[in-house]
Amino acid sequence: MKVDMHIHTAYSYDATGSPEETLERAREAGLDGIAITEHHSFNKAETFLALAPRYGLVAFVGAEVPTINGHYLVFSENIGQWNSYSRMMCSAQDLIHRVNSAGGAVVAAHPFRFSGLGYGGAEVGSLQGLAAIEVYNGGNNGEENRSALELSRAMGLPGTGGSDAHRGEEIGRCYTEFAYPVRNTAELVQALRAGCFAGKVRNGWL
Figure 1: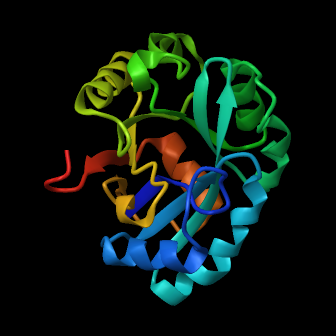
Figure 2: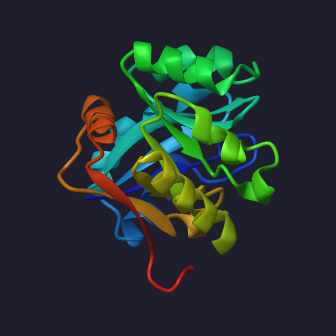
């Protein structure tokens, strides 16, 4: 099952694309599912849950949460509960602890973007409780993705892939391939915790 685990739309302040446009692009990219990980107001993306079946897709609503130690993709039930973190620069370890305590899962997003400046870098290696490292990010260059892959191996954590799309044409550049179908948030969290997936890059992109 191919899922782009990191997508932004017009619900984020720095991206474009209506739900319909985003889902159509995902279908054209050959994906089976998408994870909407907006900035700031996370619960708005729940409209994707209702629309996705019309496109033969599964949608998941997550969040990209900023911390003083980088950005993190959060997946849990009632994603709106993390809205209070959207502009509050907490520590990454505090966020991870709170999400895990609520039954969710956390993925470190693009830790080495701009040589790690502001996105965690090697500091991510000291964190406890992460489910995965985003090893393939469509907005990164090859060196940044290679550094993330090396970090995931050093930590013994699996790697995810996501386009980090801010425009429709970017969707599907990178994705996560799950070993079995994942149909809802609870199953997504379970799969992330079990490590039953691998980050992938679309042929010819990177």
